[in-house]
Amino acid sequence: MRVLILGAKGQLGRELEACFGQGHQVVGCDLPEFDITDRDQVFRTVAASRAELVINAAAYTDVERAESEPEPALRSNAAGAGHAAAAAAAVGAPVVYYSTDFVFDGTSNAPYTEETTFPDLVPLSMYGRTKLLGESATRTENPNHFIVRTAWLYGPGGNNFVEKILAAAKTRPELRVVSDEVGCPTHTWDLAEATMALCGTAAPGTYHFVNGGFCSRFDMARAALEMAGMDTPVHPCLAAEFPTAARRPARAVLSTEKYTKATGRTPRPWRDALAHYIQRRETHA
Image (tube, rainbow, N blue to C red; front, side):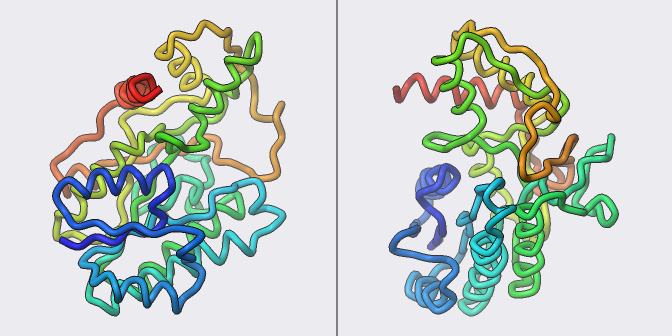
């Protein structure tokens, strides 16, 4: 199968290239040569690739800057999603679009499902709103779509939470990490494999994929440091002590039951996935 990956240089894009490259013909493109906000270029690129599957991993992910400068996020995450979906539809190919737990308000004690609607499906940030708009654009432009919501993503070469914690632990005598923000960590390796599993089904639609279980940011930081063999003390604190421009869901646990029913696969626990990632870092250090 010919697979086109948009946003191939990102932490997820690189994993997708490695995963799909094992059995498929893969072409990847990204900035500066490729710009998903350029509709004409997107259509030309998809047509020239003769893609049988288009994976849109291109995204604007600066959550804080999106609050004060929303236009770049809207162009990439919303309009760009529509360009990719429409271009894929024009060549008869399905499209994959990645969304986020930030589309939810984070007030529910129960896991969010794909059927969750208003009032829980209300983004608190501009970033979340642009991703929800991207979901809508993808559905409108290409009925043959896989919208995959994920959360707390980390992978090799990415500017992610795990890397920030490990870097901070090298220069600070102790760390303070919020304990009242709860979610589902997700390894890019696992998300790439999940994407391939979903695309192997005949069941397009909206799915959640995260690693199994949930934790607080404090729990995740402590686990990452322990697995990396670092003894920097970590102390819990409240999110209110570190005010940010973008509001984040306090508790966004995603149900993956629909994914499991479609693929027959169960996401591995988040601690196992994190240990795998730490091992990969040490191997490639």
